[in-house]
Image 1 (cartoon, one colour):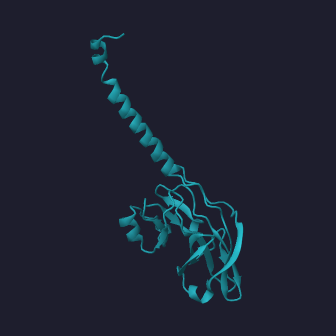
Image 2: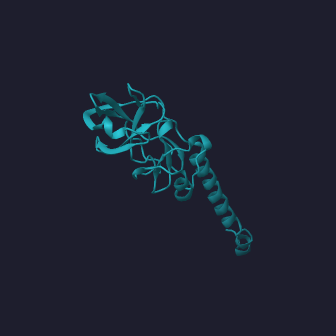
Image 3: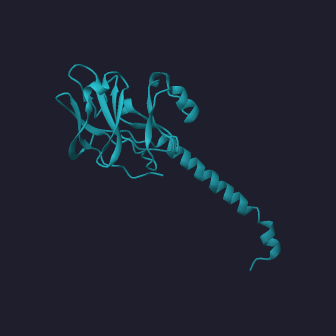
Length: 187
């Protein structure tokens, strides 16, 4: 049995070990959040009942958006200025893409943030010069997803991309016909 004196001489080990453990965990977590982001690959759509989303006339301009619910999840349909993996190229030119609006961090709802200054102020994220376009942002924990990079998480705690919705043009209407599976929440 160690003496009281021996214990008191080594008391400093406890706070030093706790501090080292806390800083080690914070370093691991920061590395995971910053460098552990998964990229969206080829779409892996799961079939779901076809659902009319909106007429194409509702999406005349770039960055026009329509919110809808598909397969029980809130989603966003966007007209974007360039082709996106998993999106729909329109016959007359233009591109559409749709994403689940359920954040891959803890399941909050993401919204389209049009102003890069709002991203900088409210989300603490300033997009690079080549990405000064609307982004999808989660107000719960300030994750940001880039709709032109297949919904990849580009900032914040979320590590996985937003699930994409398969789109079809039928006549003058946009239809949803499949959706990628919801990822495990990575909180």
